[in-house]
Image (cartoon, rainbow over all chains, first blue to last red):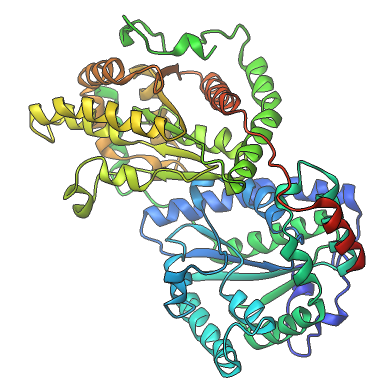
Length: 274
Length: 274
């Protein structure tokens, strides 16, 4: 199912149905079962990755998540990333840049947040904000926005070359689904805190955002740093798809338990005598 | 069960049986069930804490975990802290200080790692290393070690006064249990990476460590920054006890879902029109 969501030549975001479940035939119950069934492998691979780093393996994973509001970024973090040992996860949420961040190149704060060896880094929003809201709201001159796509491709190539498996995911919901989810936030006092009046303003720019996504996705999806557009009207599907993307990335790394860097027999004897 | 593990006047570490399960009558199966039963409350309280911080509530929680090697710090993080949303957790593991850290006061790196508003901070080791291994290995002059207890009490009082619920836990295992766990790391190639020959050297100083713990626990356990000594030979018990300590801390905060800081009806109308 992961290959079917990959952005490649001729990709058109408008053709992706947010209700669809590409590559998965079952419904919600089967999807939730599949998600549970995937926990053990993901969790073991994560532990192996972490263990390997202790023996000098510098490889790691970076999951970049972008989406319109309410698309379920938080749920991915909670229900997929939350399946593995928190000690192996470096989670970073990018808000509107601070004054200090704004005084630097837009990739400055991203570079500083890259995960260390053996870690699974997760970016909740990312440098893509600078070509998404940046483009829609004209937060930078057009020629600068234009330049950023190439800078992103170069930057990501460097990350990938240094041993990071980079997975970029757009969670794709429909405007109607967003309306339903915003409505819920307004109907439930325990959800008020998640509501921001600005979300409705952004919503009025839906088409402009989709255009900005279409451009960003197609100009920055590369062989080693591909984009995946995951239909996300069905939360269970999006979670399963991201779990599999993460698992696939870890399988490509295929991290191994490190050999002992000590003499096992000697240590056994010392332990016995202790 | 949590009150029974609290360090107060007349406490003697030597009297705590690492095999015991104070305040809990059941065995492993019941303990594991109780741990699962506690997830929902802990998880909701954490979300409330996080939500409240979005409305300006600056309170938070800091869980400090200290223990001899193999006592199960990692398991607490994985199986208890891992029960809540990773977005609300700030995990920090303290290793031997770097050169930069060593050039500062021993509390400098601790201060910088304090959790933000609404977060559950978790310290895997902490400033207590500076009066534990620091004392046993004489890493600082005796009068400096002596001074640190008071500095810690003052520092923690300041943290508590600024709105942090501070929970300090020593996971307490027996030397025999440690031997068994180290043995397992030497018997299983997938555990080699967790083994460090230095662990056996530290083991030879067991009594000195227990003395250092006894001193640190009794000199720094205060009304608002108490120590809890959690018997940890039974992993299921230690996890349950820490889950309850965390839950109790969150109950004391009693975080509330924030009121809407917008006009709900007005936003409903805007959403409907969007």
